[in-house]
Length: 137
Length: 173
Image 1 (spheres, chains in turn red, cyan):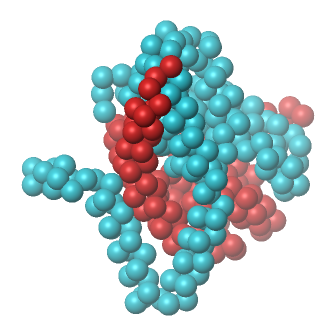
Image 2 (cartoon, rainbow over the protein chains, first blue to last red; image 1 turned 30 degrees about the vertical axis):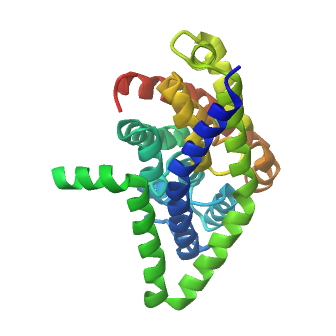
C-alpha cells in the first residue's frame, strides 16, 4: 500500500497532464459528428474498393458506436455490401484518426501509429473473415 | 524541427494540441454558424455523457497508485504476466465503458509502471466489442453477424497486440 498523499499527487498530475488533450479531442469529435451526414454514401460498384473506402471513412469518423450501427444499417439498406459495412463498423471502433494526437501524446507516437495502421488493415481482414464465416451458417 | 521540438517541450504538446483544436473549433463560427452551434451542442452532449467515465478512470488511477506498486502491476500485466495478463486485458477491454480516449491517461500511467505495449493494444482493441450495444447490433445486423464479429474482434485483439508488441519493443516510444 502506497502513501495516500503520494497517490493523490500522482493522480492529480496525470489529470492535469491529460485533461487538455482530452478536451482537444472532444472539440474535434464534436465537429466531426456534426459534419458527417447520417445518409453517408459509399458506393463505387467495386466491392473491394467500397470496403477500402468504408474502412477509411470509419477510421476518420468518430463518436458513439451507435451512430456507426445506424449509418451501417442505412448503407446496407441502400445496397452496400455487408463486407463494406463490416469494415466501416470495425474501423469506426478500432481506428482513431481524430484521437491520434491524444493517443500519440499519452501512449507514444510509435505505439499509436502502429496500433492504428494494424487496426485499419485488421478491419478489412475481419470484414472478409466475418463474411466467410457467415457462409458456414 | 529542432525549434518545434523545443517549443513542444517548453509549452507542452498537450497545450498546443488543445489550442489548435480550439482554434479549428472556433473557426467554424466564421465559416458556418449553423455547424458551429450544432458542434457546441454536440460538445456539451459528449461532456454530459462522459463526465462519470472520466471520474471512474481517474478513480481507478488513484486506486492503482494507492494500492499497487510497480512490482504488483508488472506481476499482473508486465513482462512475465503470461496468460493471466492476457485474460485481465481482454476482459478489462470488453467491460470498459465510454470513449476510447478516456482510457489513454490510465493506460499511460500503467505503461510507465510496466504494462506491456501488446496488452495495452489488446485492451484498446477489445473495446470494439460494446456489450451494452449488443441488442442494437442484433437489431440492425442479426444474431449470427453479431456473434461472429465479436468472436473475430477478440481473436484479432490478441493478433494486433502481438504485432504491436513486436514492432514497439518495450524500450521504444
